[in-house]
Image (cartoon, rainbow, N blue to C red):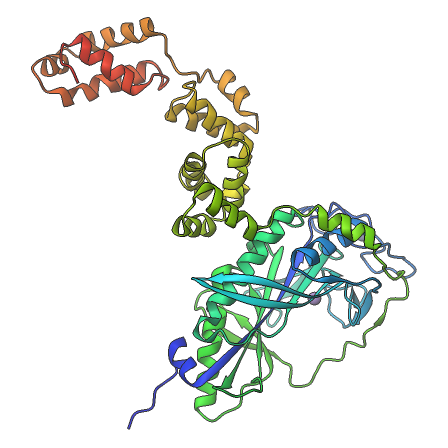
Length: 500
Ligand code: ZN
Ligand code: MN
């Protein structure tokens, strides 16, 4: 007799029901920190954006950032949450060197937004992920451990940078998601993807997982099939890409199934995701519950958002990704498969915005999935993060449509915008990119090309029409790519008496 080893997700779900839960931290893109006026800009020299408040100096008093509260309420509304009519900040007490106050100002039993949901699509299935809470807190500083290990153990010394300490952070917590079976890893990924796209369309954060402005903790547990109690969960930290979210759930499902198959107990613990291997390693055990000694923050007044203000914020929410996708499908005829391409490339929003700026959908799609994707790749950024706006792309497309630019020239125009930050028309004028449509100039260039390449011209006259390509190339070179290649070809063939 052989026993099935639970070494892949499909075998795991023959015996176990997985449950996942996600806690996501989002750094808000406000200009200043949560409780002081320090700048939030990324990449400044260490400890230059600090003050008595974010350094936790005695007697310094915090003042809440109104913009951050507004952004958090907008996130809550976009996630179908109820907005608390009254809530407070709380102190979460713990010691760590990256946190100068020895407590994090957070929210505990009175969060700003509660009881929402987010519907996510996995293949043709819609899964409703319930949102337990969305609350506002602050980020910590950043430790750098110097030495061969790069970790605190075995480090020669550690450095701390408090520039990040006090940057507004929103924590979004789901309820346990059950019933997705072997799709659990995909559901986790789809949830974070959809959440990221919503946050991006709200404009509240730059949502860069690789820079840590969107960070994810993934909880996974297994229960015997059909059981109605949840199994013990592990919490995987350090998951910083969409792909890793999916891999983390997958590897935890397989690992926990092997533990349970062996008759052992899954430990309640924090684990760390390993980017190289795709599995998780044990971290801190949580078997003894940490006591954070939460208590209401005495230095900050409670928040009581005016319902009229909340209504205004609700009315001013932008078109959210799900509605935008439905509109692209129904009004613009974008098919499911194409939508997946656009989604995977993270360009649904910019393509839609390019269409909104007047471009045909096909052209908008081709630019963002083609040349712009290539440029983004070279710069190692997402296409949507390129320094060119959807209206600028729409303008380039319009200039091609009205014959001002050839495709080659349009690409040069895009290059100019990306390099200089100038507008499309300015780049076209400055670089002299208008296409040469002056026929006499083209005729002259064609005559020159024929005179310079008599052998090629003779072949074409003799019927080898394909050879004309070399002459077209010569004319295009002479006109610095500004001629219309098809028109040049027609002119050359007419001159050589070899009709197309
Ligand atoms: Zn400060
Ligand atoms: Mn938190």
